[in-house]
Length: 621
Image 1 (cartoon, rainbow, N blue to C red):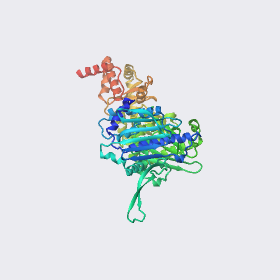
Image 2: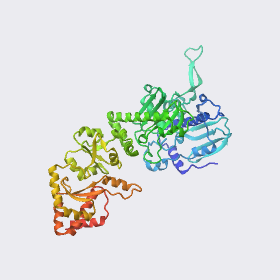
Image 3: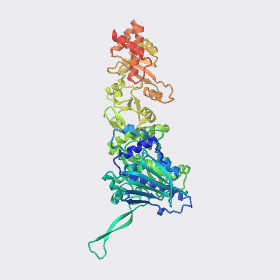
Image 4: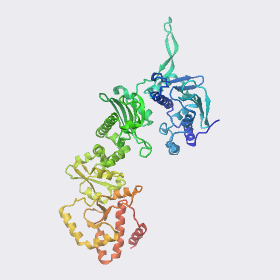
């Protein structure tokens, strides 16, 4: 009885069959990888199950070509699948982002979907008109055949199979000359070498060879001989001098299902009291789920080439969770449990070394390959910032030199060290916060500080100010928010002149303060052309107020606000005159000025209708 694919699987199957993905040749890599995983599982099980008699050297993947039947068969003697597992693994696509795939990408012709959405097996339908899977699971006396021609559905029936394992039989399409190459020995050899050379189990295939005929000089005869197509040695155990950049990148794309070239790889071999090999990659972009709760960090952990854990989270700190890779150590027991791993001294030592390797690589990239580092920062800079802020700043000293901020002077991203180098005589590091660079540049407070020749760092991420508050200092220099009332950039004469003006206007300013309900109202001489601005008093800034109130259950956080009025602007004379002649009109003007200052800071207005009407009244006069 034929069963139907679930809707999500059916949509993706249709895309596969119609070849939306042009790199069809990866189908063989996907199937071989699945076969290797199946053998891994049985081999791991054999370490604790004496009933499994097969030895490691007997595990193999076999490929067979039948040109007459147009079939390509890939077989393994791994753990196999039960009827239920065939249904689960092949009848539906693993939970992923594939549901939104077609809507998001329907106009793109060459889209990389393999691996990104858990559809490796389905890639077979790019080259096959029919796929048959015959499998017998370890511990079962029954075997089953899963069979499908595509979107019409699939069937699962009982069958006979002598040995445990899985045979995948592809009937290669016959409607294009291109597909014929997948029935050629040389093409299969090329694909295995290109994509699956690192597989730790032998990939065997009978190939046609030629040899000189006996007693017939110059004549050759053909014969068939089984050949191992892959090198068997995992890439991370090979000498790094013998590995090309293409091989590193191919391994990465195959192993981690990312077909964009990584920014960097870190290949390490440690010997002595502690032995391990590691091959780590820094991706060039964040995965679709990286900044979500569904993302699971971790490196693949092996012991002597046998997989212990698919994602070992304890090998890598959260702030470097974007790193992908493998770690292989003979000093770890194959039978170690997840709970024991968390307490394992060897694992903790390896994790500490890996953290240092990653930090060194990023530091070198920052200093020597800034364009690459900029690409990394665009993808994962937020994660580095969170690493500074999280755990009460426990890791800030490790990460502070990796931080980048946009500079008002350089008009590009710079490090804190760059800022210090250019501003050695400054006591402080000045910064300003906002949603965008253009918004920050037009803040009255920023213009005033730049006018005095200061360099300002622009903070556009919601976490930026929390990061700087966590750091507190960098190379003994304090961080100063240019919107704070503690900036103190005026000369003694300017301060004295301003004090006299504010003392003289004390009653006026008190009246305005009570009208708009703020911490204080002052005249200022720091603004150039702008009539008003808001500053914050205390530790909570206006930007922190916005961030905290935007969080779920963030509460009602209010920064203590100070309204500053430009003493040299005509509006200063206006408020002074109204205080003497018409206090009710002054109240209206106070509301408008305060609303204007809030808008400049990106804050909402509680009474927009009232403010709009007041503005219109002023314009009409």
